[in-house]
Each structure stands twice: as C-alpha cells, then as structure tokens.
Image 1 (cartoon, one colour):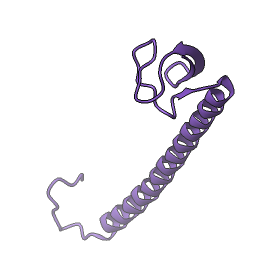
Image 2 (spheres, rainbow, N blue to C red):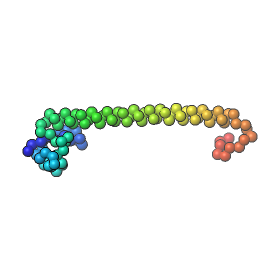
Image 3 (cartoon, rainbow, N blue to C red):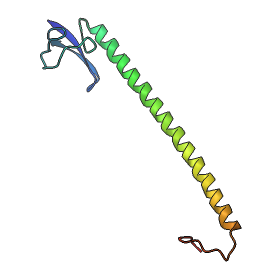
Image 4 (cartoon, one colour):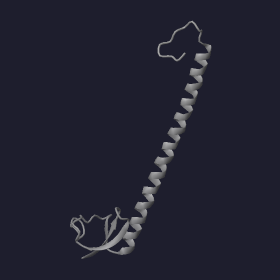
Length: 101
C-alpha cells in the first residue's frame, strides 16, 4: 500500500510502499502512526509540527543557557569584588599561601 513518510533526518516527506503498524515500509523502517500517513498533507503537517517543536525546545535551551551564563558572570564579578576588598583590607604582615604579592 502507498504511504507518506515524514523524514526528520532530511526534513522532507516522500511516498513509500508499506503496511501500517506493525508493518514496515519499502525502506525497511517500521510504520508508526506518527511517521507514516495515508495522505501527503498529514505527513507534511506532522513534519511541520516536529520542526516547530524542535525549534521551540532549542530556543528554550538557548535562553536557559544564556540565563545561566549571566548568573555566573554576576557571581564571578561579585567574587572578584570580594577578593579585591579582602586583599585591600588585609594587613601587610599576614602571609597567605598562594597569594600574589
């Protein structure tokens, strides 16, 4: 039977021969309800939804990573200010191992 397959490796839709679940298509892949469709329009709709979801997840991950970097930039700046204050206030007769003179 003719089926329409959505391909998320090449991001396209193509026609294949196969049997619905639990069958396989002419390319040797299992025919799942979310990968193989009776008509081309359904396959394109599913591929579009898949690409849109991937983009959404990727953007969310990027925004989370940016927020994390911003947090650690502030934390590093605060730590540098703290260290500078300690070094400025520290009496000259105190020896700190590993400290630059």
